[in-house]
Structure formats: structure tokens, C-alpha cells
Image (cartoon, rainbow, N blue to C red; front, side):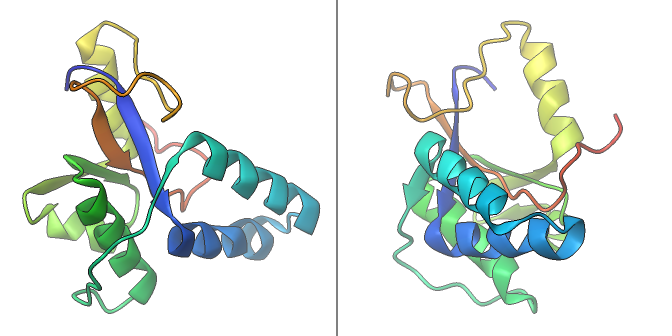
Length: 138
């Protein structure tokens, strides 16, 4: 993977993400709002044009919709159901730990997790599902 990394999300993903910290970690409303606002500012918010319904858990389909709408090359996730797909319409689905290995192997340490950087031809679109607050062990 060469070039920069662009994080993509959608309103549906942000809405789903807002419930995770409250339910799993008992975060307060203001912290959740601030976190979601920060993600919305730093990620490219995609408005998917197609509705996908191939996975039983509906929120997982929103990840696929976002990836497709963004023209993504890869989905980075720790979600087992998404990982079991291995790929979706040519979009690779990889674990978070594997993503960091790829970045490390590139050796450039230039991965930019913000769409506010230059929008050059070499930029990659990667929707990231944040369903865990810590990265998986490498």
C-alpha cells in the first residue's frame, strides 16, 4: 500500500459508533458527541448510493456500503463477520493489526488518517469500523 490513507465513514456508521462507547464503556454523552464530531471532521463522510443487504447484522452492511461508495481498496476492521467475507466486490477486508503491519512495512510512516490532507491521485480510501477501542495484539 503506497501513498496516503484516507479514513471514510458515513452518517449510519457514525450513528452506530455513538452507541458503542455508551453501551460497552459507559462513556458520558458529551465525550461521545465530542468523539463523533472529531471523527466526522477528520474522516471523509460518504453518502452511499446503494443499499447492501448481504450480512445478517445490518450495521455490518453499512460498512460495505461505505466502502463501495468511497471506492475503497480495503476495509480495516476487527468484526468477525466482515473478516469472514475476506473481500467484497474487489475490496479487501483486513484486520486492524494487519493494516498496521502494512503501514510499518511501507517504511515511510506517512500514513495520514485525515482527509484534510492533499487529495492527490495516490491517496487510498479506507473505511475503518471502530468496534473496539484498542487495537488487536500483533
